Length: 167
Image (tube, rainbow, N blue to C red; front, side):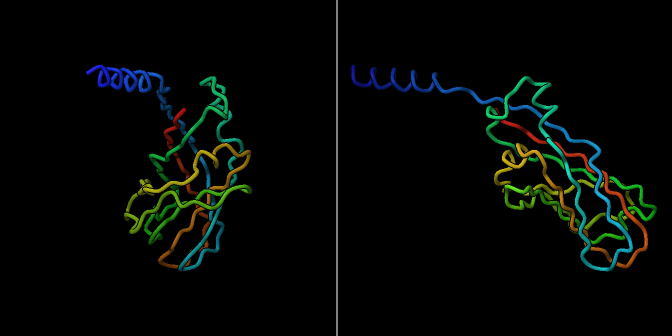
């Protein structure tokens, strides 16, 4: 009986010593990706540079980069002022990459809803090393848009991203 009590005490002690991880939300708003025309039917790729995406988050929350353990993209919304809305698009895939990390596919929408100027992409279930990407000084957000037809216009995609950050 004493062995069971001792074992229960040890389990309780070990589990109470574990440090509880907390989660905070990081929001990157108004990230502008421009597809420069002329655009052609099929695949068209554009990217934008995001510099030091964690800087404000770290200052606002009084965190150190080293304390951040994991990041998960939870929402990606794209808006456009394009007069044809998203009627030109068949699909859109978003990926993240930096000079020091592999490219990671984070969201996709296929098919793109028609007659709207706002879409919410489906978030990838597997998001490997997102926290390492966000810790970089420069990351690139890459958009691959499959178009139904040619267009001479420049198209601006305004992206809002939400992440859960474990620390």
